[in-house]
Structures are given as structure tokens and as C-alpha cells.
Amino acid sequence: MNSSTMIDGVAGTGGAVGDDPSRRPLKLEDPATVPAVTELTAAHDAAAVHGRLREEWGEMAPVELEPGARAWLVTGYRTIVAMARGQLPLTTATAGWSGHERREASADSPLLRSLTRTDRPTVERMDGRVHERLRTPLDEVLGVIDEAEIARTTRARCDELIDGFAGTGVADLVREYVSPMPQLTLGAFLGFDATTAQQVFDAATRPTAGGKSAAVVHQLSFLLNGPAARRPDGEPTPAGMLARHASYESIAEVALGLLSLTAIASRGLQAWLSQALYLSLTDDAFAQRLAGGRLGIDEALDEVLWTASPVTTLAPRIAVEDFLHEDKLVQAGDALLLGVGAVGSDPAIRGEGDWDGSGSRAHLTFGVGAHACPAPHLARLIVRTAAETLHHRLAPKLALRPDELRWAPDFQFRLLETLPVVFTPEQTAPQS
Image 1 (cartoon, rainbow, N blue to C red):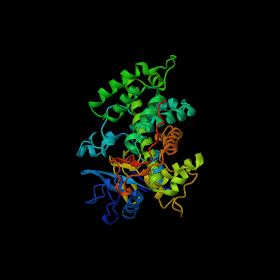
Image 2: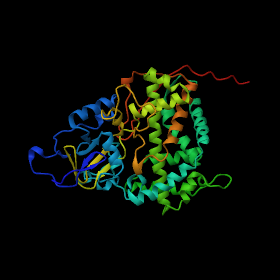
Image 3: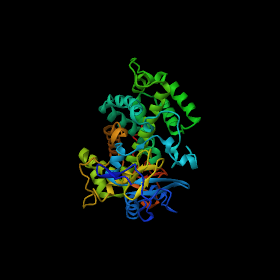
Image 4: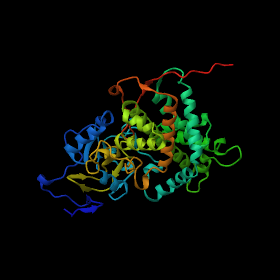
């Protein structure tokens, strides 16, 4: 066996592995049974599941996504960083997943959707120069958005959503507040009216693999060539800036860039806001921090990212060659899920307290390396404003026991399916 190389303290090798059965490393297909990833996605205490997986398998556990489809779930902070930074032979291009040989990932399966084949270049599934070319327009467009405008727009749209249920005394915060909020706010930032924003987000939530992608790309291309591309004064909207960006080689790439931005950003914002609201309804100490002014809210939002991460795993990576880690042999074609939702419970980095992440933003929720989130500061501003606005207007209380709530079947984002609350209805001022 070739000697292991050390990458930021992480052992890895592309060499052959010895033939001694007693020392032979574990391969993904070796165990007769492995934990189902749904044990994690459905768990109320994700940290406990991560702890059991570490105890049994170490920091890289074999898990089953669906029958016949396995992946490695990586829960170690330092290893995740090394993998995300490209220090091990991995790619985000999912066409190389060996699971395609046994079954074709279905775009209709919530747990396999991100492993589907695609014949179109998307920023989250490209590496190297192609990824850099597709990422540049998103970075530049997000970089020119005014933060004061974001705060005003987010607050106005959140107030409009709250107006829709504030007088009733009951609401499902996921359906009536968390889910539509990113559509309205991001749509406004990009320069879309409400109808166009609805069309864009509907397109972003539909499968884009195979033949279905052509219709979605055509629809978005039509929208990007219409009024949404320019403001009333003739200046380009952010969407129009994307459509004209020199890095894109076709309008189809523009459309796919817009899909990447809206789909990933909206799910991330929904998950972060729903986790923050969930904790505010079930943890009195957290609720007090959330009500403690801007510094208190930022500390509370960091606590969410550490202890109730809205992101369970980053986009899947695929091994491009064999390498050894711990006592596991990762083979070319294996899928790896970088479990950033596990880093807050990683015993290698956590402290003695229940939560010791105050002031630390090294939680990896936004990723690291070339594929990191392009605008975490904007995401924080939107979620902070949305949480502030709701708690300023209402004093909601959870209408169910916490153990009656359910999370969506999604191994990338931890998003509640419902969040029913009750509150004292706002009184409508009488008409004069």
C-alpha cells in the first residue's frame, strides 16, 4: 500500500490497499445493512444521530439514501473543510456517481434529486474554470445589491405577509410566512414583479434534469428578455445584469444561473428562518437572545447555525479516484455528503458548554472553498429582518408539541414541513 499523504491533518491516498483481510479497509458496499439517511433527516435531535453514527462508524459513516443507493456521510469538521477545499480527489459533477450504474437517480425523489444526471452546466455541479466562469456573474450581481434596500424590501414584504394572517390568531408559519418570504424578497431584489417572481420560483422548484430542463430554460430565457431585464429608467435590473454578463456563453447558461441562485438561496433562507423561529418557540433562553436587539439577534442566528443548522449537508461530492480515510476505502464513483450540520457536535472542536459558538462563524453552514455561498451577509440580513419583523408584530406560541412537528425529506436542508402557531389577533383599525 502506498503511504498515506496528509492534507491539513487528513489522511488520504490514491494507492492500492493491502490484501490482508484483517486490515482491509471498509468499502461502501461491504456492510450488509447501513443506517438510512432518513434517520437523520426526520430526527428531532440531529446531534444525537450524528453522535451514534460517530460512535459506530467514526467520522465517515455509510448511509442509505434509498434502497440500493448508498453514500458516505462525513461528520468531521477538519475533513469536511479539506474535502470542500478540493484537497481530496472529489468533484461536484454528479454524472460520475457509480449509483447510476445500478439505478438512475430520479428528479422526483427528494433524497436523490441532487444526484441526477444533467447535460447542462450549472454552477453547483461544475468545478475548475467552468465553475469560476459561471460563478463570477452571481458574485458580481450580488455584490452590487444595496443592503439598506434589502432591509427595507424584506421588512415591507414580511409585513405584507403578516397582514394576511395577523387578524386570525392562527397561522402555519412555514406555509404563510417562511416559504413565500424568499420568493417575494429575492424576486424584488432581482427586479421582478410579483407575477414574474412567481414564475421564476415555480420554474426553480421543478426538476431540470433530462428533457424537462429544456422547457424550464426556455421559459426563463423568455422572462429574461422581457421587461424584467430593465428598470423603468432603462437601467438593467440585477436579472438584466445576469442576462448581459460576458461570462455566460448562452442565454441558457443565464437561465441556469438564475435557477441556481433562486433555488438554493430560497431553500437556505427558508431553512434558516424556520429553524430560528422553531427555537424561539421551544427554547426560552434562545427567545430572549432573539429579542435582545441586533447583537442579540446575530448571536441567536449564529447559535442556530451551530446547534440547529439549517443546512444538513453541502451539495454531494463524487470521488474521482480511490483514496483511504481512517479505516474506509472511498472508491471512484462513491458519493460523499459533507455533513456541515454535524460540526456543532463534533467532539474535536466543541467546548464544554451547551453552546460555545458565541462570536464564531466557523460553522461551515455556508460552505468553504470555491463552492461557498456567495452572499452569506445578505442571507443573514434577510433572516434577521424577517425574524425581527414577525416578533415585533406578534407573540406567537407553538400550537403543537415539538415532537409532533416533522421535517421535510431533504438531506441538504433542514426545513420544517409545518410550524403551526397561535397568537393574539391584531386589531384592525376601524374604517372612518
